[in-house]
Image (cartoon, rainbow, N blue to C red; front, side, top):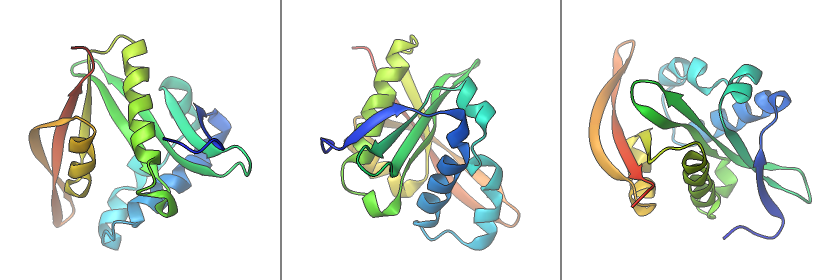
Length: 160
């Protein structure tokens, strides 16, 4: 459960740069090699336009204004709703912020008519998503230059 001082609210387009910083810091927490981080540049860069076009919410400390994490969901016409981003600043990983953001993302997806929410996840966060009720439904290989990594495809059903 979130502290009383923490709230989840819609992100505003003018906050894109702050959210990009959160995504970068969170991704760097997992010690990816520099060449792989370069590959993530476009994916981790949040734009005002992205926020305007996709449900994007952030968790912030109301007392300090500090952004603790955020998520965004995105509709893919051919495959439904996907979590595009779910990032928590490293100092708050393991505090429950990620779980609260994930539950909020599920609720948001339900309000836009989704009956399931899809996830592409790095193996290091599989345990988190399994704990939250998602199931692993496949995998894919992502290549970045000479490097490659396995990504997990997961799904959580929203309606019984």
